[in-house]
Image 1 (cartoon, rainbow, N blue to C red):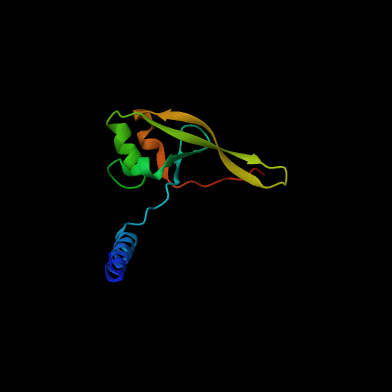
Image 2 (cartoon, rainbow, N blue to C red):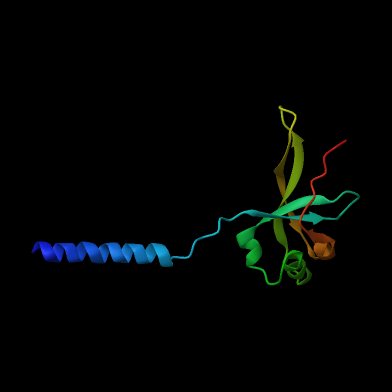
Length: 117
């Protein structure tokens, strides 16, 4: 094989690599989306992975409410607030809970973390 053909092969490989890199869609990292669940006196912070949430039709809390209203139970993470050794507060997942159709009207999009007095 002559040097010309080697350079042509290298050029084609570089062009294919560059095209794949530029045209490939950039993946958005999966992250937790937070909601408030109003079951009792104080709202509970819950979270669901973004990719799982996007599989449901609708927007925001409507996605969860619609799925629950149609009788589809959903498993989400319940978050709790803990005081760290350095005195700061950290929100972390406590446990998984199952939402039912009774929870459909009790959800709001976004969550407010309330620090203890």
